[in-house]
Image 1 (cartoon, rainbow, N blue to C red):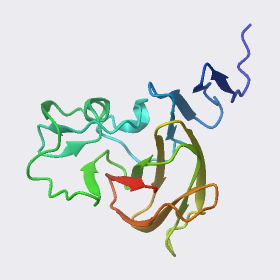
Image 2: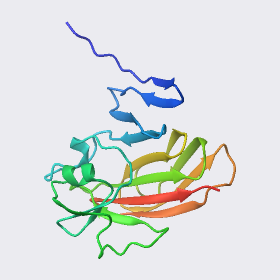
Image 3: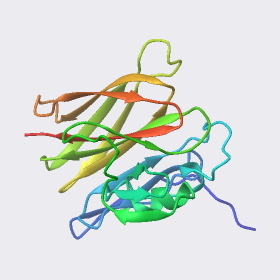
Length: 195
Protein backbone atom coordinates (compact mmCIF):
# COMPACT_ATOMS: atom_id res chain seq x y z
CA UNK A 1 0.00 0.00 0.00
CA UNK A 2 1.36 3.36 -1.05
CA UNK A 3 0.70 6.46 1.06
CA UNK A 4 1.37 9.92 -0.38
CA UNK A 5 2.41 12.47 2.19
CA UNK A 6 2.46 16.21 1.56
CA UNK A 7 5.99 17.09 0.60
CA UNK A 8 7.57 20.45 0.00
CA UNK A 9 11.32 20.39 -0.04
CA UNK A 10 13.78 22.80 -1.53
CA UNK A 11 17.17 21.40 -2.41
CA UNK A 12 20.28 23.39 -3.13
CA UNK A 13 22.75 21.32 -5.13
CA UNK A 14 25.76 22.82 -6.85
CA UNK A 15 24.30 26.32 -6.82
CA UNK A 16 20.98 25.24 -8.36
CA UNK A 17 17.64 25.43 -6.60
CA UNK A 18 15.19 22.57 -7.04
CA UNK A 19 11.89 21.69 -5.45
CA UNK A 20 9.54 18.75 -4.96
CA UNK A 21 5.81 19.21 -5.49
CA UNK A 22 3.53 19.84 -2.52
CA UNK A 23 0.91 17.23 -3.38
CA UNK A 24 -1.92 18.60 -1.23
CA UNK A 25 -2.03 22.23 -2.36
CA UNK A 26 -1.04 21.57 -5.98
CA UNK A 27 1.77 24.12 -5.89
CA UNK A 28 4.29 23.02 -8.49
CA UNK A 29 7.86 24.25 -8.15
CA UNK A 30 10.16 23.41 -11.02
CA UNK A 31 13.87 24.02 -11.60
CA UNK A 32 14.88 26.78 -14.00
CA UNK A 33 17.81 25.76 -16.26
CA UNK A 34 19.58 28.98 -15.25
CA UNK A 35 19.39 28.02 -11.57
CA UNK A 36 16.30 30.05 -10.65
CA UNK A 37 12.96 28.65 -9.59
CA UNK A 38 9.74 28.62 -11.59
CA UNK A 39 6.58 28.72 -9.49
CA UNK A 40 3.21 27.63 -10.86
CA UNK A 41 0.27 28.00 -8.48
CA UNK A 42 -3.01 26.18 -9.12
CA UNK A 43 -5.38 25.59 -6.23
CA UNK A 44 -8.06 24.08 -8.43
CA UNK A 45 -10.63 26.89 -8.24
CA UNK A 46 -10.66 27.78 -11.92
CA UNK A 47 -14.33 27.50 -12.83
CA UNK A 48 -15.70 25.59 -15.78
CA UNK A 49 -13.12 24.70 -18.36
CA UNK A 50 -14.07 23.68 -21.85
CA UNK A 51 -10.72 24.24 -23.53
CA UNK A 52 -8.34 22.00 -21.57
CA UNK A 53 -6.61 25.08 -20.18
CA UNK A 54 -3.50 25.58 -18.10
CA UNK A 55 -4.93 24.08 -14.93
CA UNK A 56 -4.76 20.69 -16.68
CA UNK A 57 -1.09 21.22 -17.56
CA UNK A 58 2.15 21.93 -15.79
CA UNK A 59 4.19 24.49 -17.72
CA UNK A 60 7.23 26.49 -16.71
CA UNK A 61 6.66 30.22 -16.45
CA UNK A 62 9.61 30.92 -18.77
CA UNK A 63 8.60 33.70 -21.15
CA UNK A 64 9.39 32.48 -24.67
CA UNK A 65 6.41 33.93 -26.57
CA UNK A 66 4.70 32.14 -29.44
CA UNK A 67 1.87 33.26 -31.71
CA UNK A 68 -1.18 30.99 -31.77
CA UNK A 69 -3.52 30.26 -34.65
CA UNK A 70 -6.15 32.37 -32.83
CA UNK A 71 -3.96 35.48 -33.23
CA UNK A 72 -3.08 35.60 -29.52
CA UNK A 73 0.40 35.67 -27.98
CA UNK A 74 1.09 32.88 -25.45
CA UNK A 75 3.85 33.00 -22.82
CA UNK A 76 5.46 29.83 -24.20
CA UNK A 77 4.67 26.83 -26.41
CA UNK A 78 3.46 24.74 -23.47
CA UNK A 79 0.81 27.35 -22.60
CA UNK A 80 -0.37 27.44 -26.23
CA UNK A 81 -0.54 23.64 -26.35
CA UNK A 82 -2.52 23.57 -23.09
CA UNK A 83 -5.04 25.98 -24.61
CA UNK A 84 -5.36 23.60 -27.60
CA UNK A 85 -4.07 26.27 -29.98
CA UNK A 86 -1.75 25.57 -32.92
CA UNK A 87 1.49 27.58 -32.90
CA UNK A 88 1.92 29.57 -36.12
CA UNK A 89 5.21 31.34 -35.29
CA UNK A 90 7.76 31.98 -32.58
CA UNK A 91 7.66 35.40 -30.93
CA UNK A 92 4.72 37.68 -30.21
CA UNK A 93 1.83 38.03 -32.64
CA UNK A 94 2.12 41.24 -34.67
CA UNK A 95 -1.41 42.37 -33.83
CA UNK A 96 -1.22 41.76 -30.06
CA UNK A 97 -0.76 45.46 -29.27
CA UNK A 98 2.11 44.81 -26.87
CA UNK A 99 4.48 47.58 -25.91
CA UNK A 100 7.85 47.22 -24.25
CA UNK A 101 7.50 47.46 -20.48
CA UNK A 102 3.72 47.01 -20.67
CA UNK A 103 1.50 44.00 -20.17
CA UNK A 104 0.59 41.20 -22.53
CA UNK A 105 -3.01 40.02 -22.28
CA UNK A 106 -3.34 36.56 -23.79
CA UNK A 107 -6.17 34.02 -23.82
CA UNK A 108 -5.42 31.47 -21.11
CA UNK A 109 -8.55 29.36 -20.47
CA UNK A 110 -12.30 29.46 -19.95
CA UNK A 111 -13.93 29.78 -16.55
CA UNK A 112 -13.98 33.41 -15.40
CA UNK A 113 -10.61 33.34 -13.62
CA UNK A 114 -7.69 35.44 -14.83
CA UNK A 115 -4.04 35.13 -13.92
CA UNK A 116 -0.77 37.04 -13.77
CA UNK A 117 2.40 35.39 -15.00
CA UNK A 118 5.45 37.40 -14.00
CA UNK A 119 9.19 37.52 -14.40
CA UNK A 120 11.53 39.45 -12.07
CA UNK A 121 14.92 40.40 -13.55
CA UNK A 122 17.94 42.50 -12.66
CA UNK A 123 18.36 41.20 -9.12
CA UNK A 124 20.04 38.10 -7.69
CA UNK A 125 18.80 36.76 -4.38
CA UNK A 126 15.55 36.44 -2.47
CA UNK A 127 12.75 38.25 -4.27
CA UNK A 128 9.43 38.61 -2.46
CA UNK A 129 6.58 39.32 -4.85
CA UNK A 130 3.40 40.68 -3.27
CA UNK A 131 0.13 40.95 -5.16
CA UNK A 132 -2.40 43.41 -3.73
CA UNK A 133 -5.93 42.34 -4.57
CA UNK A 134 -8.38 45.12 -5.54
CA UNK A 135 -11.40 45.90 -3.32
CA UNK A 136 -14.33 43.61 -4.02
CA UNK A 137 -12.30 40.87 -5.66
CA UNK A 138 -13.29 38.57 -2.78
CA UNK A 139 -9.77 37.22 -2.38
CA UNK A 140 -6.98 37.75 0.16
CA UNK A 141 -3.72 39.45 -0.74
CA UNK A 142 -1.20 36.92 -1.91
CA UNK A 143 2.55 36.90 -1.45
CA UNK A 144 5.06 34.55 -3.03
CA UNK A 145 8.75 34.11 -2.21
CA UNK A 146 10.78 33.33 -5.31
CA UNK A 147 14.42 32.32 -4.89
CA UNK A 148 16.48 33.32 -7.89
CA UNK A 149 20.00 33.21 -9.21
CA UNK A 150 19.49 35.05 -12.49
CA UNK A 151 15.70 35.32 -12.79
CA UNK A 152 12.50 34.74 -10.86
CA UNK A 153 9.05 33.69 -12.02
CA UNK A 154 5.69 33.85 -10.26
CA UNK A 155 2.00 33.48 -11.03
CA UNK A 156 -1.28 34.50 -9.41
CA UNK A 157 -4.89 33.61 -10.19
CA UNK A 158 -7.76 35.89 -9.28
CA UNK A 159 -10.98 37.53 -10.32
CA UNK A 160 -11.17 40.40 -12.79
CA UNK A 161 -9.74 43.72 -11.60
CA UNK A 162 -6.66 45.91 -11.37
CA UNK A 163 -3.93 44.46 -9.16
CA UNK A 164 -0.76 46.06 -7.78
CA UNK A 165 2.33 43.85 -8.03
CA UNK A 166 5.52 44.65 -6.12
CA UNK A 167 8.76 42.68 -6.25
CA UNK A 168 10.65 43.56 -3.09
CA UNK A 169 14.21 42.19 -2.99
CA UNK A 170 15.19 42.15 0.66
CA UNK A 171 12.85 45.07 1.46
CA UNK A 172 14.67 47.67 -0.65
CA UNK A 173 12.91 49.91 -3.17
CA UNK A 174 14.87 48.57 -6.13
CA UNK A 175 11.80 47.32 -7.99
CA UNK A 176 8.90 49.40 -9.35
CA UNK A 177 5.28 48.71 -8.44
CA UNK A 178 3.38 47.46 -11.50
CA UNK A 179 -0.34 47.84 -11.97
CA UNK A 180 -1.82 44.89 -13.84
CA UNK A 181 -5.34 44.48 -15.21
CA UNK A 182 -6.63 40.92 -15.01
CA UNK A 183 -9.42 40.07 -17.43
CA UNK A 184 -11.58 36.99 -16.98
CA UNK A 185 -10.32 34.00 -18.96
CA UNK A 186 -7.00 35.71 -19.77
CA UNK A 187 -3.43 35.84 -18.49
CA UNK A 188 -1.45 39.07 -18.04
CA UNK A 189 2.29 38.62 -18.51
CA UNK A 190 4.47 41.23 -16.82
CA UNK A 191 8.17 41.82 -16.40
CA UNK A 192 9.57 43.73 -13.43
CA UNK A 193 13.12 45.06 -13.71
CA UNK A 194 14.84 45.69 -10.37
CA UNK A 195 17.92 47.92 -10.39
